[in-house]
View 1 (tube, rainbow, N blue to C red):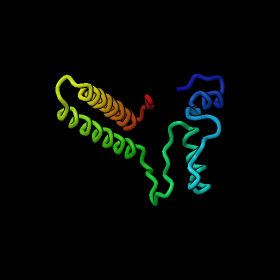
View 2 (cartoon, one colour; view 1 turned 60 degrees about the vertical axis):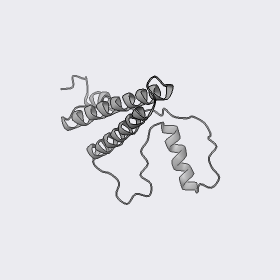
View 3 (tube, rainbow, N blue to C red; view 1 turned 120 degrees about the vertical axis):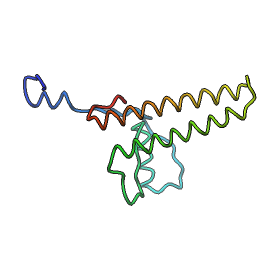
View 4 (spheres, one colour; view 1 turned 90 degrees about the vertical axis):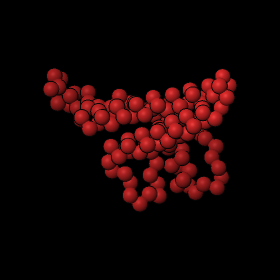
Length: 127
């Protein structure tokens, strides 16, 4: 229950604000982009984090599906880096780097899995 002095104040308190976090100002883009492509790229760069569904026949409508896809990609990254760990000599800089990258991707899997669980439970996201 929202204990605000008015309905408008209650709605304002629940409003999600997602400010631009990307690049501000003009950006040099490749000259071979069509005008609409350049607009999309500028928008995404300004936003900082954005999903672009340009050219897709069927835009993903289910947020849970997007999370499942993201989790799948992160798992692939874990497998990729873990495989390279095994190929590098013990104690090498390369092995250490791949171990760190695999660990980071595992954290992403855990975080996105938590987001998916919270989404299914009807809770707000933590990202």
